[in-house]
Every structure is written in structure tokens, then in C-alpha cells.
Length: 249
Image 1 (cartoon, rainbow, N blue to C red):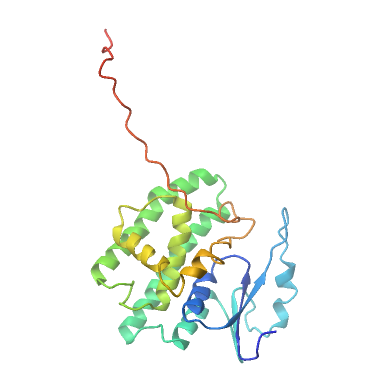
Image 2 (cartoon, rainbow, N blue to C red; image 1 turned 45 degrees about the vertical axis):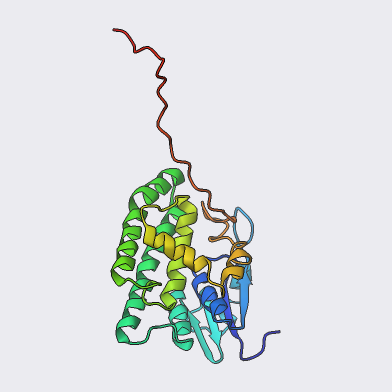
């Protein structure tokens, strides 16, 4: 049984919108109860585990994810992340940094919403996935690449981690798993992702519990099961046989 002063973070048993807050808490080594709710099986994917508790938790706006921090009870993923950011001094050192952190949280949320449209709502999944990877994702990656280049810091906002980094890494990682690309055209983004994965405070968690949890719900067309990054093989140009005679007219 969790102690009365321990944080409770409630969400589906997936990474989804709660994982940035989980990463932050793991990084800060904060004890918390990771309250997980499971979907039922196909075809209904019933949500009874959550619905049976939804209106008994004292939440003003019952929803997942939620955070119970003593008498404070919050829902909405970005609200929870920024609350934890303030609580654990990860919202910047001044007003400018705080505003940029909020900007990056919103910007990465836009990317995750675009991905949600692919994973949950696409009728022709392969066609929609290709369009996302070929057209939508490169626009976002270029913006983050340019921001990292312009800002010139180790992390997205500063040389120390902020709340924005936990969300940006997580949502980029979802896209990286879908794309199976090496993102060679975005060296700053690639280096950023690699550095985050090597954080001593998070490396063990990223390689264990984090890696064993799906990014989406069971009903999703992608990510409802645990997925691994499998880099696409580049198509090699066809070899020309020098001994082959050219065709005659």
C-alpha cells in the first residue's frame, strides 16, 4: 500500500501521454505509485477497469492520465507534466526559459497528435503512415533540428534537462519507432535522442519497464503491441554487368 504522501500517477498500461511524466519522476528518483489500467480484449476493448473508478477518485475533471499529489488532484497530461516540472525545479531558471519550455511541450504535443491520427484513425494505414513519414514528420524534425542548432545547448532548452525534454524525447521516440529510419538528415535530433537514452538516471528504466510497455492502446493500428525499431534497408542501385551487350535496335 502506497504511503499517504506518495504521488499517484494513473493511466492506461501503455506509454502514451503519461510516459513523459513517468520519465521525469524516474529521472528525479521520486517514489510514486504507477497506477495502471488495462483495456479489455478485442473487439470491444472495454475500459471497465478505469470506468469503475473514474468518478470515485475526487477528480474535478475525471480523465486519464491523472495525478494525485496529496490534496491536489489533477488531470490532463500537459498540466501534470508542468506541475511536476515546477515541483522538481525543471521549468527553467527564468521567465524566458519557462515560456520556451511550455512552447516545446505544446509543439511536441502537436507532433504526437499527428501521430495519433495515423495510429488510431487511419483507414488505409500503410498509405497514411507513408504520407506521415514522407511529408508530415520531416517538417517537425526540421523544426526541432533548427531549434537545437540555433539554441546550441546540450538539451532542447538549456544545458540541463527541463520538463520539455522528457516529452520531446518520448514523442520523438514514438515517431522513430514508426518510421524505422535512421534520421541521418537530422544529426542534432539523432544526437539528442542518443544522449537521452544514455542518461545514467534513466538508462536502466529505458531498457526495462519502458521498453516493455506498448506506446498505444490495443485498438491502435500501430503501437498496440510492443514494437522495436528496425531500420529500413536502403535500396541499392542495380549493378550493371559490364560484360552485358547493349540492346540492339
